[in-house]
Amino acid sequence: DAGVTQSPTHLIKTRGQQVTLRCSPKSGHDTVSWYQQALGQGPQFIFQYYEEEERQRGNFPDRFSGHQFPNYSSELNVNALLLGDSALYLCASSLWAGGRPQHFGDGTRLSIL
Amino acid sequence: SQKIEQNSEALNIQEGKTATLTCNYTNYSPAYLQWYRQDPGRGPVFLLLIRENEKEKRKERLKVTFDTTLKQSLFHITASQPADSATYLCALGIYNQGGKLIFGQGTELSVKP
Image (cartoon, rainbow over all chains, first blue to last red; front, side):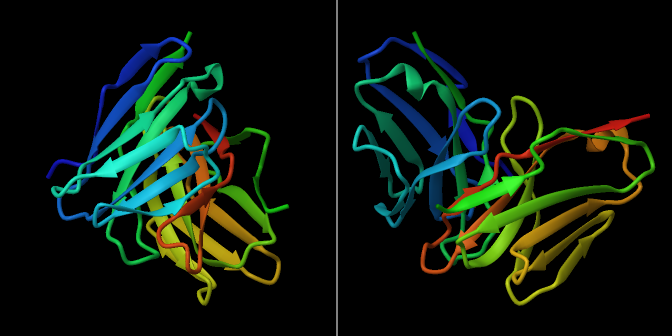
């Protein structure tokens, strides 16, 4: 049973560029959440998708957008990249009902030069 | 402002001893609290979940307590082993915010043989 898979594992971009990160949830899960984790910090919630709609959003600018597909997979898009966007981006899947454990992928390490 | 604080200093203990990690929060009324383990370069792995109406949960060598009056959770690892060395994250789930998790910054645990 495959867990959460993310691609790519590493990415290097320059300021002003755009990036798309991808996530396939654990089999049987219908909800995908995205988190940003800076070095030495805990993950920060970006947004959550269920039934192809954004259901919750954290304190992130509109440069961060996402999408969920009918097969529950998801993409995170970041436009106009800033140096401060350098971080580990984590995808987590779960069942929609609240209070469930989240299953995380190993993330995409994004470096902005 | 709303805060979640974990032991900011790394915790160093001897093999066989009990490790106790602290998670304090202010200005939240969490519906539940989760603990995760994170190894370097990997995504967080779910360990335990405790709900607001529960005082204590156990799983093998792990125990978590939840005191909503003190606004504190304690996470214990008994008979600790070097393989328990990792960063441990606490995360709050809030009513009416779906599966959104608010993470603390994590505590790094090192168990010496």
